[in-house]
Length: 288
Image (cartoon, rainbow, N blue to C red; front, side, top):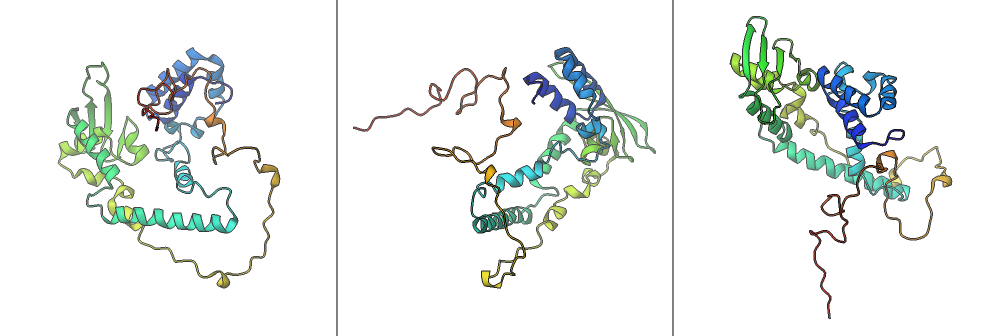
């Protein structure tokens, strides 16, 4: 992000960090080496277990960054630059509202898996029906899966599924604890219940248990205990300047636009024009 500002390098670097297959990792690494040899040497010096899902022994369950913390920051946005009392009230009330919202969703869920995971399960189950399966050992649960060859010349890949070990050479099953389409094809072939090979953390019952408790309203301020500490503000970090402040978010290196990345329209997000001359802009009428 700082030393090698290139969109292609960023794309391949993200693909390397998120891939679960060794052959794809090697291919992306080769592409980066052809684009920028110095960037390739820089990535080699970083321990792969720190940024690659393929080499972290499947501990992160698919999370590349602190996505949960970022989602909470989005839910609590607006609490910055408020007095401490108002900040506490806003944070508490929004947390309660968010908790109640997801609690209602969990209690009204009628599928074996939550809605998002149920859609993913159905999508992978549809893909599983087009796979070509070969049984190697029924007792040990070893199968070979060949994916369907697509018109775009993709597919036709071979994977090995070990049903009892819950592993597949694509890496998704052991990384996500959620069956891939290859594992679902084996499960259908053996006549097993496909929901049984899904990890219990994805079940709707587990989802409901996260919201079975409730928040307690805060008592009156006169019942609060006296604090034995005092807040000391750091005025060196206070942003002061003329005019209206356009954003509350502190910008970092992720907000910096790459030099070779084209500017995009604020309405349609397409390059080549701006909001002023966008075809999707609503016409303005002068009121006489």
